[in-house]
Length: 318
Image 1 (cartoon, rainbow, N blue to C red):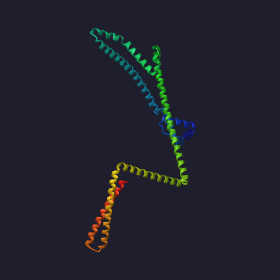
Image 2 (cartoon, rainbow, N blue to C red):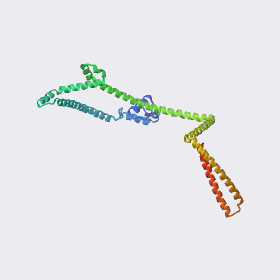
Image 3 (cartoon, rainbow, N blue to C red):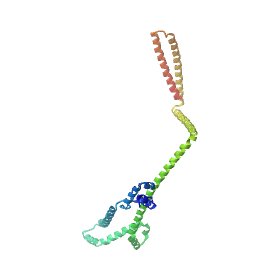
């Protein structure tokens, strides 16, 4: 069967989907992508014949399995030696503490011989206690069982733990598969959402002209009202700050200063008017005219300064 015919069939597409889901890293390939690239689909199928479910080549997968088997064997041997060493160390430490409390004499040293004879029994007893502790931790309801029933449960505990571990691995594998499916569905949903958004955008572009002017008017009115509200709010904050800053006595003093400044400005304006009349009268004069111009300029500058001070005090009194 040709590659194109194989990929177009339902069975071939299903196999390709399984290859993409399990043996190869998730690449978010849709059926349309696989159909449009038959040679790439054929390459995926060829690769799947030389790979296991984890993505390793068959040779490497076999070597890895053998290596893990040897590691587990060495690990089991090491754990046995480590457990025996720790149990013996605990017994020796316990015996040493007890001997310190009893103040052993040279005659009591024959207890070491007794300890060596009973070492095997003590080790077995300690291991049994530890196994029972592990059993009660795994199944707290076993704490009230008899030693015979506990021993029977401990004998099957290893198989139970292996079964639970296998269940966890299966659940993890299923979770991984579900995550792959979720990623693919998420990609599909994203494409659908993009198409929907494009359709909505086209509909909006076609129909918004009918209501655009009304929306613009409403938006402008809303922005105008919002701007007025912000201005009023700023004015209220300014008045609040001024009311908290200036007391009635300060306002009265500022009012007196403003009245004096207004009187001084009025006098300056009268002087400036007189100077302007003099300038108009003596405009034809030479040096005398220059002197009058300088005097007029000084009077005008003084008037502007006092007017500015009056404005500042007026702002402070508001």
